[in-house]
Image (cartoon, rainbow, N blue to C red; front, side, top):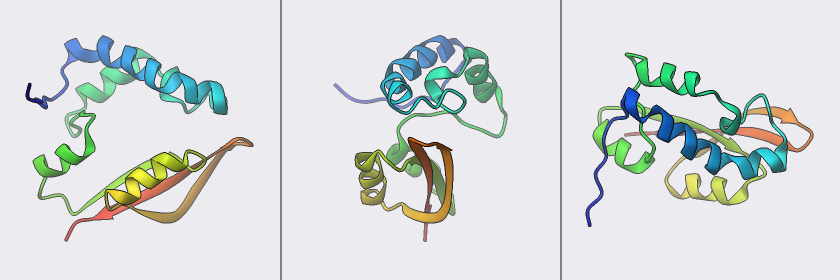
Length: 117
């Protein structure tokens, strides 16, 4: 069975919304970041992202880097307390930048960048 990567379309919004809630609900419960958690986003926000003409909405980072091979850099954010996520991104070549954002007393967001040579 092969993996196919396709650009999200408006008809995918409901499925993406459901996946996003399932994926991020444990982190929402753990960190109680109700204002910033993807688990709390509305389907309208997903639809807005899909409809943006300057944004392509995919999920799998590494494959995207090959599709957009002319990109000069990639940026992402993750939860500092989720050490496994930080380790994964660092293993993929992302470097943590100095910028951080405290969400609440349980959670801090850290920023990463990967410069492509």
